[in-house]
Image (cartoon, helix red, strand yellow):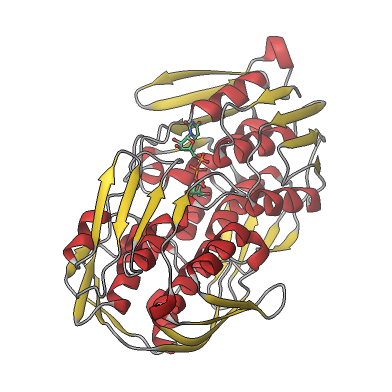
Length: 426
Ligand code: UD1
């Protein structure tokens, strides 16, 4: 088991470059199944979740070539001969279920393991399945798997375009349904769709393959089905959550830190919250921002996580670390996942004073955190523990860092280059 050992209190300065977006890369790899020829993806982050999605595709029979050095992945889906996402892979990474829409749409059948709960909540897939059913598919649940197939009496050999009203703007459901609808017959409209920038990236990617999608990034996405899609060459957008993580690291213990490829427009609510707290964050241009830290002047605030364009739930544990050392009382309300405060007890072990009241965390800012051995419970909570360690006095050991490796490319290298004292040990 590997862990990070951090000697806190070092000042961060310099430049850091943000990698390709995990939550876009995973979907684009899945979507490449829809093409009839080879797709090349660029700026692919070299992280564990991407390796798992590559495994999922290889397991289906696709030929995948990974060039780690150049961050390029080539996917040839012509050899796909299996239509199953097995439990061993889905339990490692829930996003594996994103192959369901493409497989169902292209081959008329798919068998996916039901992901079950995870460390941040129960995370059902009912909205994905309801969407597939509205498109003319049938499904049955047996032995922990969903078997989904096109009902030929209703839709022939292709899915059938329709109007789908999502009860909640689920990102995964919007993506799975959008991918499924690209090869459906006729027009599909997804109402109350998720609006994240990664949804727009996926729609642009699919359009570059020959799909006909409008309105991605708004509540209503229209997909005019096409008969086939061709492979494409596409560069993945930068990762907003990684950018947000480095922005908070700089606000906590930076001198002057420049973040390249931060695309602050994708993080507008987060950005304005930081301004409200008093973080000196300035826009260099649309891709780059600069943070000059002045911790003594920060003020408490309230945060409410919401689907995009609201405050991102993925940055909730990370901003909580900053608020834990801001004098006064801040309240963080989690509205997207029911169990996203698992990190709080760990942060309290480092001297934070946070009380949980239902889906609210009430944070009384302390002067300093102090280093301690802590665990990472999930990807973002793990990153939050690292940031707490950077800001704390003394040594912090963060264990279970495989969670962090799932989503942050070269996390400790990037922090070290900024001046952090962090090393990975067995
Ligand atoms: C994605 C992101 C994740 C982020 C989350 C919310 C990826 C790989 N992951 O996850 O980092 O935290 O968006 O921004 O992109 N729900 C249902 N039924 C469904 C689907 C979802 O009840 O069929 C609920 C979930 O339990 C959760 C909420 O909807 O409470 C949000 O889930 P969703 O937007 O689907 O998140 P993911 O796509 O899984």
